[in-house]
Length: 257
Image 1: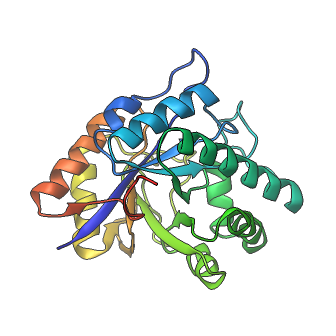
Image 2: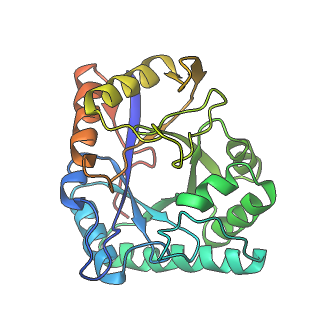
C-alpha cells in the first residue's frame, strides 16, 4: 500500500493576532510543524497547539526559523554560525519542554521560510543546522526539500532526512520551488492541487510550471496553514489520497512519548 505523511505549519498565532485555522488543520494532517517563536507563535499558542496535536495523535515537529517576526521568517539573513546554531538549539529546546508538558514529544525539525530555502543548497549553513539538531538529539529527523543537496548531506551526517513536496507550490523544471515573488508560485484550486498530489504519490512526478515533468521523491506533503483556502486545500488532498487507497500516517511513528 502506498503511504504518505501530511504536514502543516501551525501554531503561528501571536498574541491577539490570528493566522490560520489550527483546529481544522489538526483534524486533517498527520504531522504538525509548530512555530517556535522566532518567525511566529508565542508560548501560549505553542502549548495549546501541541496539546491539541497530542490529543489527536498528530506528530509534532519544531518549525525553527531565523529571528524575524516582522518578516515572518521569509527574509534572507546571514548569521554567524555560532549564533544560528544557538538559535536552533534554543527553539527546539523550548518546544521539547512544551511537548513534554502536553504529553507528547518533538519527533523532527523542519526549518521555516528563508532558512529552509537557504540550507537546501547552502552546504555551510546546512552543516550548522545539522550540528544544532544533533547536539539536541541525533534521533530527530530533518524535513527538507525533496531533491535538494541537503537530503544527502543530512544523511551523511547521520540524521534521518525526510524529503517533502509542497501541495500548493509551483515547481521549476529543476525541482526547486518557484519563488513567491513570481506570479503563479502559489496555487489556490483545491481539486487541482489534490490531483497533483495523487500523481506525486502514485508516480513520483509533478508538472513543472513550463509543463515539463519533474521527478519528486517525497515522504511527506506540506499543506500550508496560512492561506485563506488552506483548510479546503488540505481536506481535498486528504480525501483524494484516501479515496485512492493511500495510507496517511506520520513518518515519525506514534506521536506520544
